[in-house]
Length: 225
Image (cartoon, rainbow, N blue to C red; front, side, top):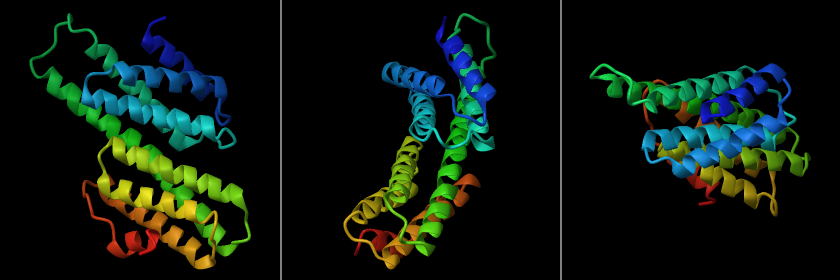
């Protein structure tokens, strides 16, 4: 079975089993993405394999979350990327002179949407979890584990697409959340919430083509300055 067929069989299994996450499929898909990333010489495709790998990793690590619309949309983008890659791997076929530019634009679109589908879901979950936690600070470590993992995942996704502002805030948020394991007060949780909201703000601007710098006060607060 070729690479595309392997990917498609597992992605289709994910879609068939929704809203339950099919663990065997996400584990195999994560491994396939890692293998493709390690041997991929082209930057745009390395970004694709990395984004896809992070998507399947997130599903594997959090199997109790449902496979909803956002996840289905991300899986659809992975399928689109596989189809495009299959065309890319067939240089013997006759193509228009400008086909390489068209394929590159198509790949950029796929990567953009694949990033945003994941980043938006992470951002919304971070804001919701931290908002609930700020109202009930007695909640214990499971909340902290979830938000810290999501913040690290956000930083990895932002690094994939070279969105430095989001990566800075997400990394600072993850570090600040790590400090909350030893010292925790309500104001610290509210600082975390502001960090999550800042990520959301930056993503909204990025989605419409505007790259903004993070708010200096939010970064400073997350860093404890």
